[in-house]
Picture 1 (spheres, one colour):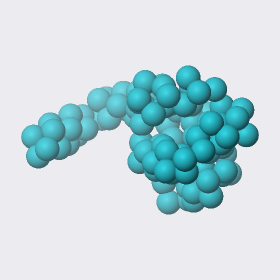
Picture 2 (cartoon, rainbow, N blue to C red):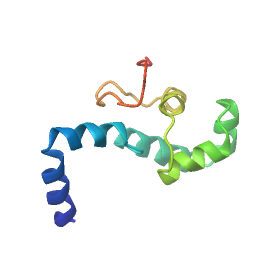
Picture 3 (cartoon, rainbow, N blue to C red):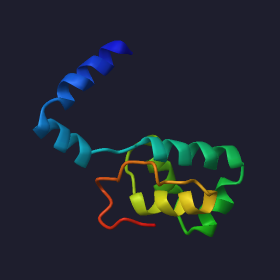
Picture 4 (cartoon, rainbow, N blue to C red):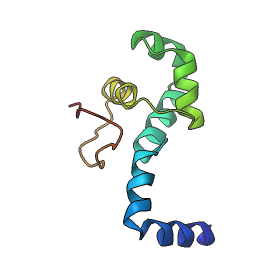
Length: 97
């Protein structure tokens, strides 16, 4: 894993690449935490239904194919996950409290 970390650090040193990387992110530590808790809850279908989140959208999120930041924030609120110490999402147009 050191090889990947060194390549990533080298790439992120370039401001243009860093900006591109930030815009194109698909999964972050917060999203991973949300997925972990949803999966551990054992009642994924009920949680998703309660929040009106389509199973396909959740599966896309889980696979890292497409993140919908607004859905992540709704899941955070539902699961009681604090987001204050997380960096702002570059894909989120308007911060959600």
